[in-house]
Amino acid sequence: MEVKLILCPIDFSEFSIRAYHHALSLAEHYRAKVVALHVVELFRFPSAGFAASAGLYDEFCQAARESGKEQLQGFVKNHAHDEIHPELVVHQGIASDSILLFAQAQKTDVIVMGTHGRRGYDRLMLGSVTGRVIRRAPCPVLAVCKPPHDSMASDRERGHDHHLRRIIFCTDFSKNSERALNYAISATEEYDAELTLLHVLEDVPSPAKTEGAIAAATEQLDKLIPPEGRKTLKIKTAVRIGKPYRQIIQLALETQADMVAMGVHGRGTLDLAVFGSTTYRVMQLGPCPVLAVHV
Image 1 (cartoon, helix red, strand yellow):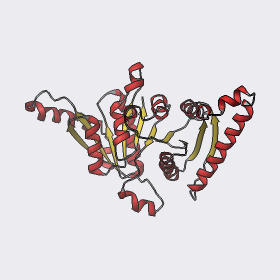
Image 2: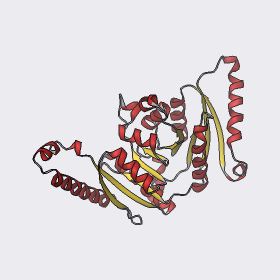
Image 3: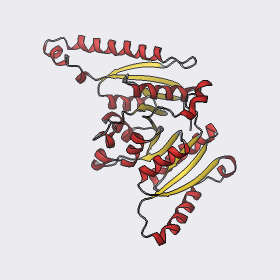
Image 4: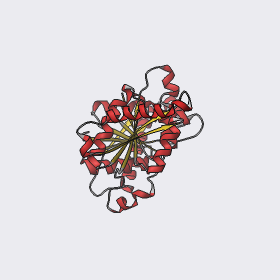
């Protein structure tokens, strides 16, 4: 995995702060460039309608962009990094569209963005911006919701806020997860981390067949380990039974995982509403960031 350009959308929320810290940490490790992008969405301004009717729309837009630029400059200054000096970009439009267009045009390697992790409808959608970006992104998206756990304190003291020690890769053995596995293995090698390949059995026919189902899944997981990685990388497998998102979250808690990698897809109309419910629930309820790799 080659990381040269990291895009971090900023909406000035506490979730943006967490995502920005992750982006800086990745940039420090990979010696990559960070672009902090803020999108001015005019529909969020109550006075936009008045400006349009009064013929002051252009002036209003300019003022909104200038205000966004000042806020972005203040945000970066308040969360400064000694070595990383991000490029600041302010766009006007729809947030998700602007993020996706920038990522595609600039050939972004990874998007790091915060997720608000709300309840109710957003339990599945995680906020429309994050949801749309993940479904359509041309590159992996690192979704950050929860703050880093206590095990990262020593790394923060050394300046590496989010060093990856333990990574979980979740697979249902479909082609959707193949690309995510490549990223998980690459990150494992890059950070000298420990990787757990996880498969969750949701529907076991009967207790008598449980042992056989676990053995078969374990064998499939073992086949995913690249031959060159068996000797050089720290990779193990795990098979669990239950609701996938619950078992993924439980394993992440037990192992104090620093990142979960998952393959996602957003293929049809149904997926626009409930796509990747397992992925979304792990993002919203899990204890660590999720690397969502679009197929």
